[in-house]
Image (tube, rainbow, N blue to C red; front, side):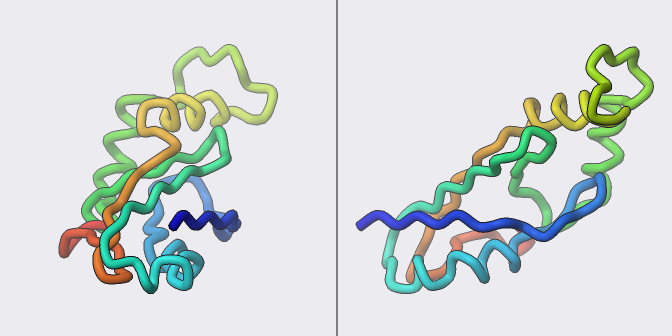
Length: 113
C-alpha cells in the first residue's frame, strides 16, 4: 500500500542542517504500520538538497564550500550572490533520497541523519 504526503520544512540559513526529527514527525503516521518498506524523499527546491550523513558533521559545510566556492565568476546572480552556488551544490548532492523502513521506523545507522 502506497502513501504520500507533502509538507514544508522550517526555514533555515545557508549550510547543512539535521532535519531527521522534523521529517520523522511528518511521516510517522504514514509509516507506523509498515513492517518492511522504503521511504522516498524529494525536496522541491532548487537551492536545497538531501543527503544521509553522520548526523550533523560540520565538515560537510567546509567541504562543499571548497568544492563550490562562492567567489567563482557566476553568471546567474538574479536571485542573489549565493544562488548559483546553491544550485550547483544541489545538483551535486541531489534532491532525492531513499531510506528503508523496518517495523514502522526509519532504518538508519546509529550516527546517520
